[in-house]
Length: 445
Image (cartoon, rainbow, N blue to C red; front, top):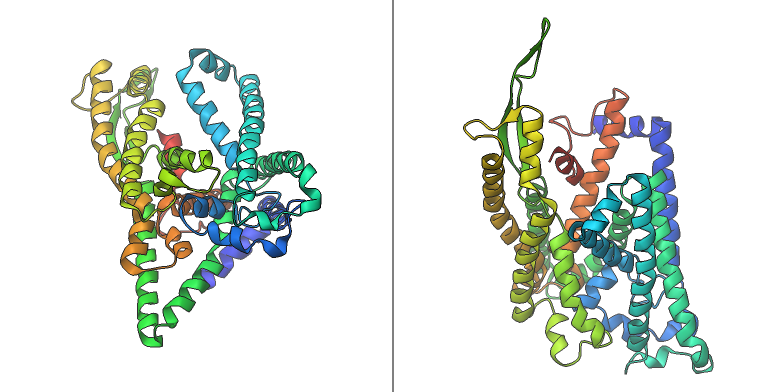
């Protein structure tokens, strides 16, 4: 405990790190305040039906990502999710379209062009989702919250305000990335998820103790222990690597010797990260959008994460997207060429194409169990709710995108804090070794 207090003092004593932390907290506070500002033309006292209809399925997940702003009909109801969708689309286009690859390789100017196009696409995606959200607000059960005297201005003002709100949240995320601590977009999503944690825990606590104090306490302890075990397993999945030995040939220049070192090539078990789950949920979310967020008809199977149809389709989509995204971002041929250029080789494997085939084979072998584990993490909330009878809001913290984002963002943020400490010759956060976030292993690749 004494070492922990000393570490906190060291963190606060670094002026640059202290300013970054305070700046990040300030912008997060602004975002959370905006999440409680209701859209014009809506009576906040009549939003009970809207809140109850967004407690399950994909709408509950979306509401969790934006910190409850969706169910509050807030000006930040769509949050930063349209920007995430636009960024994913631009990332895929950059990988698949050769002209976009050339623009990306132009350096800073190319990056600025792609970022500008991403912002334009964000406006289009936000306007489309805002129109669907208006249809959801006007659906049966939610329309009573609309103020009749404002109906003639409601559609236009809501589309404009939701679009501006998303762009403002996007700006907050960029400012956190530039001048704050951690990745701004991920921090905003994580704070939205964590905002639901106290309420969800209290609902679960209350429901357990209604059936008896002793039995309820035992079940709650089992749930907390299971949650801790899942988090530990998820950390292993995020940081798990297959280390391929690499040797570098010796070179003698004058009286000095270069190379001859033995190193390792880290291949991640989960190279795709959280992207396959985001892709899969985006695909399963489309039926809900086209039905006006109501989940009517056949779309109801994709609004309930305890449905077996949802679990099967979701698992297949996650596994497929894991292999697809890994193939897009991982290039064994390029890695083999880089090793050959730096006089590196894998023991027992010829340089060039055989090395590329060897690396590709290993990557295929470790991607399959990683994809299966990722799919299992994605459907864990549904299993937990079915097996233990937990509340829907509390079950979302047992897996899926919510837990993956929280664990990954916390690891990345702690890694940045530890880097700042070690740069100034302080002790790190962990006495057993360096904290490795997702970006550490990715940069190693």
